[in-house]
Every structure is written in C-alpha cells, then in structure tokens.
Figure 1 (cartoon, rainbow, N blue to C red):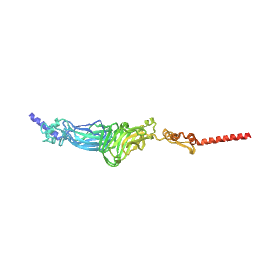
Figure 2: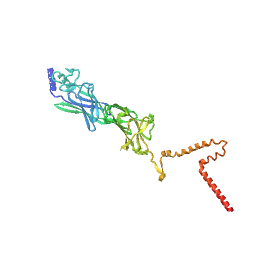
Figure 3: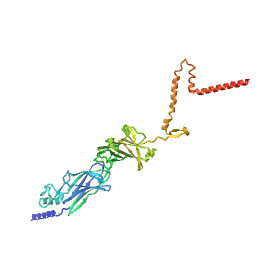
Length: 458
C-alpha cells in the first residue's frame, strides 16, 4: 500500500514537471583581468550557471563590449562540447577590439534536454540517466532523467574561454547577457559589468597586429619595443603615439602594399652605440628601425616636443631646434617646423626619408654680419668669435711668409768675396724710397749751406 502510494506521488510529481514550463534562474559571471596591454591577447572566462533543480531554455549568450560611449555585441553560439571552438576572428569595430576565438571551457557540465533546455545530468544513477539524449523530452525515455535531475542534480554550467584583445588604450567595460524563454516570454539576465584598463605597449614587448589599428601606443624605454603588422595597404597609414619620451608621434605611409612590417623603437645612448654626437646641443635621442626599404615609404613624419624651461635655461631660441638623422655614418639635418604648443612644450614636426637614429638638437644660426666704416671704403666684420677667427688671422700669416723667403736669400751671400756690395744691396729693396728722399734732402741742405757761405764771403 505504501509502495503504491509512493509510486503514485512520484508519478504525479513527474507528470506535473513534464507538463509545466521549466523554471529559469541563472547566475552569470565574467572573470577578466584588471588591465592588459594594447594588442596583447587575454583570456576572459564567461560562466552561465543554471541553478540546482532547474532547466533553462537558453536562447542566446551575448558578450557586450563598451568603450567611450560606443558598444559592440557579439552573440556566442550555445555549445556544451568541452574544447569546441564556437567563434573565431570577430572584429569589434565600434570599440577597436577583437575576439580572437571562443572555446567551450572544460568545466562545462550541462546537457541539453530537448523541449526543456539545459541542465545537469549525472552520467550514472537511477533510470535512464546514462543516455544523455532526450532527457526532459516527455513521458517515456526522458521522465526518469528529468525527474531525478530536477530534484537532486547539482548546478549545471556552460562556460566559455574568450580570447580577446584591445586595439586601443583606455577603459573597456564588458558584460555577459543571456536570454531565456520562460512562460512563453523571453527573459534577460545580465552579469556584473567588468572593467579592463588597456595600457600602452611597454619597452621589451613584441606585439603583433593583423592590420594596423587606428593608433599604436608605445612606452619608450631602454629595451626595444617591437610591433609587427601582418599587412599594410597603400591607403592605410600607421600611426605610433609614444609616451615617456620627447618623441611624441610617428606617422608612416607606404607607397605600396607591404607585408610583415616590423618597427622597433627604443631610447639610444650615442656613446654606448659608438655614434658620434651631432652638431649643436643634444636634447634627446631615439632609435626607430623598420624592415622596409626607403623606396616603399611614401611619407614618414616624426613629431616631438621640447620643454620651454629647457630652452630658457640654456638660452636657446625655439627656432634653433632641428631634428637630425644619422645615416651613412654622418648626421643629416632634417627640415623641422613648429606645429604648436602644449603643456609647456613647443611641438615640432620633421619629415624623414627613412629610419635610423634621430637626435633632437639646438643649432645656433650664424652670427649676422655688420658693416664697419662709412662711404665706399667700409668693410664687413662679424662680431662673433667664429668669423673673427677666420677673417683676422689672414694678414698675420702673410708677414712670416715674407720673412722666411727673404732670409734664405741673404744667408748664402756672406762669402768672403762680396764684402761691401751685399750690405747696400738689401737697402734699396726694403727701404729704397725713404733713403733716396733723405739723401736728396741732405744734399739740398748741404748745397744751401754752401751757397749761403759763399754769398756772405763776398
């Protein structure tokens, strides 16, 4: 009697569960890192947890990504096969990010009950629990499994490992959204929103991009930061923005499509690198290398900033700043222009035909030349030491040049034979005209004295 009563109650419960709509209560969770590096892949684990004793008719699983007021929503196929790749290479254009792949996490333990959705079923146990197909389908094959798991099963879970990377820096917000059909209506469940801070690429990192993002952020240091871009088209410029450096930006455009572009950026110490210092006062140096020939580059612009305080402390005018490029063993001054001011800095831009070591320098212009003297007999003189040293020494070497020439001519002559003759010979050469005048004056005086004397005697 008791057995019969127990059987009737059990059957009633089973029938009630079968012909009623399944309950729907989910717990959603996103496990994310707090921060990451631009362009570097990170793993995000998304969990859909089905509460114990319930079946959930899950209709969709969606990952929502938001940045700077823009959002992308990606629907993830519902799949319960651990290790299965359900999505790959999905670009999120609004938020400058990318889903590389989505794989079903091995911890997934949910099964599909046709007509009722997903829940957990133990592989062993009462009735038909080992069949794993059709549980919850209805009276018959599924009633044993459905009734058992609805009352006694642990929580069921569908989990995904999402490989994601941000193509820009800043704060990203991610949320998991799951829709479930219940009582003929679609109900939506949302996870707690998680935030990921994306930072610039630090020194020593190597980051790969399929195509160039809108902006590549670099943190310049002693170690090389390497950026690899699989493919760059002619009409797509590559823009680098740099931190921790006076060099602020590099804008690179190509004359044709190029593949596997590698750009390496780092600080450089000229002495340790065995490079001679350029002309002028050096402010800062950087090494930028690219594995593309100069002929493939249509334009390369380098933007940098110089502190106004440094200019003032060193007595340097802002117009003296020039960017120099070390190429072919020598330094070449690049055409440099002022493009603006910001945060106590003067911002400059220079175009370069290629890459190598660059130095921000201050080169003082030549001193202005001024006229001295009036009328047509004036002459030009430069007040600065450099021109003076070049102009004034000219007459000084002329005097010694004459002296050595005259001395050898006199030295071989003192032989015993020409005693009185050689002595007067030099006199006419250096002082001929003055001696003649003195002689004439002397003779005139003597003649005048004689004439006066003769006249008085008479």
